[in-house]
Structures are given as C-alpha cells and as structure tokens.
Amino acid sequence: MALWSGRFTEDVSEFTQRFGASLPIDKQLYAQDIAGSKAHARMLGQQGVIALDDVEAIVAGLDRIQARIEEGEFAFDINDEDIHMSIEKALIADIGEAGARLHTGRSRNDQVVTDTRLFAKQRCHDLMEANLQLRRVLVDAAKEHFDVILPGYTHMQHAQPVFLSHHLLAYAWMFSRDFGRLSAAYEAADVCPLGSAALAGTTYPLDRRATAADLGFSGVTANSLDAVSDRDFLLDLSYAASVSCVHLSRLAEEVVLWSTSEFGFITLSDAFSTGSSIMPQKKNPDFAELIRGKTGRVVGDLVALLITLKSLPLAYNKDLQEDKEGAIDAARTLEDCYTCMAGMISTMRVNAEAMREQVNKGYLAATDVADYLAKKGLPFRRAHEIVGHLVLLCDQRKCGLEDLSLEDFKAESDLFEADITGALDAESIADARMTEGGTGRDAIRDQLRMIETGLLADESRL
Ligand code: ARG
Image (cartoon, rainbow, N blue to C red; front, top):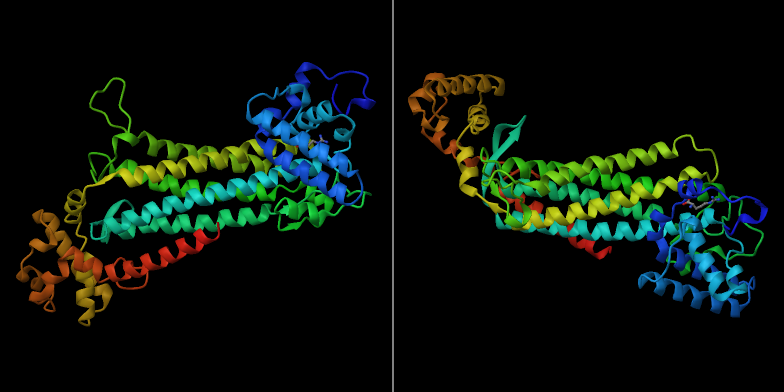
C-alpha cells in the first residue's frame, strides 16, 4: 500500500500504478531529494517541531539510503510511485517512528520542485563549464589559424574574404551569449519553495530561510501557490539549451559542408568520423550530423514543456510530473553536444590551401574595387555599376578581376590607376576592414582580447 493510502479501500491497478509513476525518471533526483529532506529535518529540529534525536536518526538513515542507492543496493519499486515516496518509505522501514515525522510541514508538491530546482542548478552549472570548454577550444583554434583566409559567404555564395579566426570567433560569441542564458536559468532556479507545503503554506513555525540557506539557495519563493506550480526555471533551462543547440547545429552544418570533397576546407580526425558498412572509401561526419539532428529533440523538449504548462490552473496538477524528462534530456544532450563539438574542433585539420583556392574564385574583391572608385569621388552606386561591368567581362573571359589589365579597368573608368592591383589582394582586402568587429586582423586582435576577458569573467562565476 502507498504511504497515502489511509482513505483508500482498494489498490490502484498495476497499469495505473505504472502509468502514474514518475520513479523511472525522478530517481535521478535521489541526491537532491535526500539533501532536501536532511535540510528540512534539521530545520524542524531547530524550530522544535521534532526532537533533535529524531533529526539525528533521520539524517543518519537518509545517509544510509544514499549509500545503498549509490552502491546499487537500493531496490526501487515502481509501486512507490516516485523518488520521494521511495526514500521516505525506506526511511520509515529503517528507523520507524522518527522517519514517519520527516514529512511534517511538507508536501510532495514543494518537495518535488525543490529537488528539481536543485537539480536544475547543478545541470546549469555543468553546462556552463562545458560551454566554457567549447569556447576555449574555439579561441585556441582562432589563434592557431589566425592568418588563414577563406571566402566569407552570404546566400552561400562567395562574398568577401574573411579570416578563419574571425569565422571561428563568430561562434565563440554565440556560445558566450548562451553562457549568459544558462546563467540566467541558474538564477531562475535559485529560490527555495520548501515551506509552501501542498499549496497554501503551513501552520508549523518553519524557518524557510534556514532551509533555503542550508541547501545553498539564494532566497525563498514569495507565493506558495506560484511556488508549487512554477516551472519557469525549467523553461529557461530548456530555452537556453535550445538556443545553444541551434548554434551548435549551425556550426555542425558548416563542419559537414567544409568536410565535403566539394569544399575540402577541413579534415575531421578519425576519432570524430565513421565509415560506411558498404562503401569502403567513406569517412562520414556522423557526429556533426548527430549534433545537428539532436537539436531537433532539444527544441522539442522546450516546446513539450511549454505546452504542458499552457492553461494549467493553480496550483499543483499532476501534469507537472511531465516536466522533468524533457528538461533532463535537453541538459544531457546539450552537454554531450558541447563535449563532442569541442573534441571535433580541437582535432580537425584545417586545409588552408583549399580555403585560399576558393578565395580566388567569385570576385571577392569586387566591393573593394567599387570602394576604390568611390574613395576617388565617384558616387558608390555608380562605382557599383562599373565594377558590375568588369565582373561581366571577367565572366565572359573566364578570368578573375586580378587577370584584367589596367587598360581593361581604364576602359570602364579613368579613375583607375596602376595601384588598383593592390586593391585586389585578399589579405589586404580583409585587413582593410578595420571597423570594430570587422575581419581586419587588428580588429580581430581586439576581438580576441574581448572574448578572452569575457572567458575569464565567466570562469570566475563558476
Ligand atoms: N511525482 C510527482 C511529480 O513528479 C510528485 C508530486 C506529486 N504530488 C501529488 N500530490 N500527487 O510531480
């Protein structure tokens, strides 16, 4: 019989028992549940609600249960419904009467959300660490390949030359914003609901702030109805995970593209590639594809939780039991994706020559040739048109802008002088983009300094 079965005369069916149970998922929260119970018991003792001897027996009993779980000796029973019931029942079986006093002034409704908040805080912390590791890898790669030049793209068409360092740092910035989102999710989780009891608070003289402090929470929730039904912190975690996975999927997509024979920009290490069961020559970027694919599931986790919460009346409803599976999955998936991406980037080979070769295609200097004329006083729109003619000429001759003679240039505009050839060199073109945040190497150096300062600041927050 369940611990709540006093007013029942019939047992639930085996099916409804299984259907209603959250144990297969929430047993992952055993450590948080035990920590929460110990803190609650200690506070009950301090407030004189239960005897100090009972507190001692409860704490020692809970420690024994934790050891049994961790040694794989705890027999989880689906009939216990959830981790809270499992542990409480085992405690009562172990220490009797004292164990039966633990649930004084508490409900599973404030207990479950306390556990979940502790769990979410831990996961946010782990994810922030994994996020930092990926950013370090990107920054190291940007430094290592600082001078490598490649085409920058818009619409997947060659646009203007950029440095690879600039391209890699673009991702580092995305992930540093994600760190901010994870940190916001951590803060959202960082208030303690214990003391809200089932929905309305409790008549016992609880010291909510003492329990909160004991558990490392920064504060307590302000409204008991909100406290037992609020899962915004899980939405925040799932949202942060979704956005970061979307960023990872963008990088993963470029890894897939760049490792094709059409691009050949990078070669993944064998450790991050797989073969084909039929085509002996194949080396597939499976792990980048998986990161791309897993993003769908993480975004699904967010949407599922949003819809679970939609239209829920106050206060606790059993629907809320569906909150954990997706959020746990989103956090675990993101952590794995961070680890995988960091490994893949730090071990890939960059084929600078292949990148360089593509820089010579697609008239990447066209904007700069137009700027050359505009800087000599020609209105930019006019200059744009003239360079358009030059590109057309190159198209017809199947050559690059750098293959045109000064006469070819002059035939389009008198403003062209011999120094036009200097405007066609990809490195100079890129380096000339000195605006803050541009791809000029001096600007990238400033950017690197900023991103490293941010990394240090974020490291110090952990
Ligand atoms: N297993 C439940 C959950 O995860 C715990 C709270 C249940 N409370 C209740 N009164 N049924 O949400």
